[in-house]
Image 1 (tube, rainbow, N blue to C red):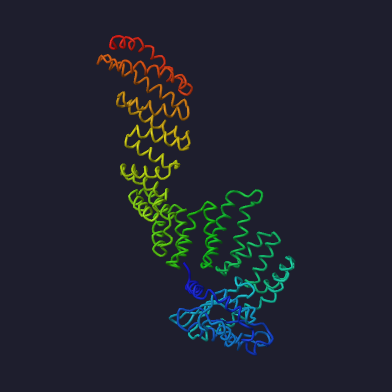
Image 2: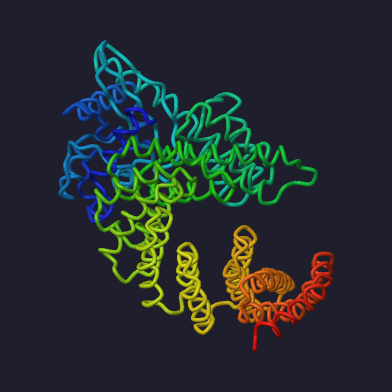
Length: 579
């Protein structure tokens, strides 16, 4: 969850997205005569606040307190008039707080190397100000200031002013470190930073220059140690989080010799922790958030992205982009009910999100929850909007089958094949439904049509083999010739599509069973037709069992040994009954 400060900051970011460009057109002539005074300049813009005008009042109070506490030759507090004139010239409100990018642009315009960002709230006992001092050349780098509270606004502002003065003590050393770093003199940068940090260990802007210098010197452990120290005191410090994420990622991608799996797992956890904190610190940077969230499944931990997404949604309810991102995260993490809930809200907020892909994924989510009726309803909704989508039609037919609506499923599958004769999945689904309905002749025709339309013969052969095996088992249970004959048809088709020892053995075994049963029934019924059926079946068995014996030698041998025992009886029946 985000603090009040983060929520207010987020709202402000969404209010003034275009100020950066507008400010670029404002001339330096808007500055007052005080801009020519010597000394560093610091800008105090309107603070974030849920209370009307409180942000303006707090900025005024801090500006006044800081001016009283400093020598103008050492520090110039940018006058309110300079800020107001610049904003008015741009056509923007002079009382609304600025988004981070806009604040940086304004600070650059009024020639302030540092500026304040913060929020002010009313409390039961007075006022609270949370703030940080930012350096204008990089708005991600700043010094978090102690929380200031006071019964009066001026009391809190006075504390902030003192904290600004304390935070600025690190700036000469930070500039020396930065300049050395920019020139590639990383050891000099380290030396400049360490000297000041020995006296001012909480100087986070300077500490990050030290961490980045260590990183350039390939001193990863030192870089991590400093960055973690900064993060411990400032959980929203983007540079420290970015450095930690980059360093841990490099340690995972290029592990050092002797590193154990446990260490790599720990580094992965630390990487994801840093990335999650970075996304939470800058939730409106959707590209960053997406990159962070996409890293979780890449590292094999998709479910760990869920808490981050959940917090983002709670802080930004109804945001279409975040809803879409959460929809994909929940699907990827196999949290299907949550995905359905978020997806439903997503298309309610943005009807354009109800694409064919959305319906396909929705159907799949319901199917994964074993809710075929809901899946069919979702597929039907999708087909109303995208009637020519073959995948939706296929999903619809499949879920009708799962729901037991076999006739409707059969009709739907036939439409899929008719609309797309080259669709392998359509043929297999149609064949499965025909198998469920015991439509043997139709099933054989479907398999042949599939082969003629380029479907993989080996896959079709396996399907026919399965159908033949099922029919053979049914024949063993029923002892009915018709079941074994159905098995023979499927097994012959399977062997034609791709010859196999399995098909040949089952074909021979099925034929033997036909011959055995027909021999008995022919004698009982004195039937010429059954006698000839028995003779032809034993011939078919004799042809196929030897090849099947390559995989099933014992079983094939037993059947081949038994056939001659039936032959005299069958020949006698043919002579007696076929006159």
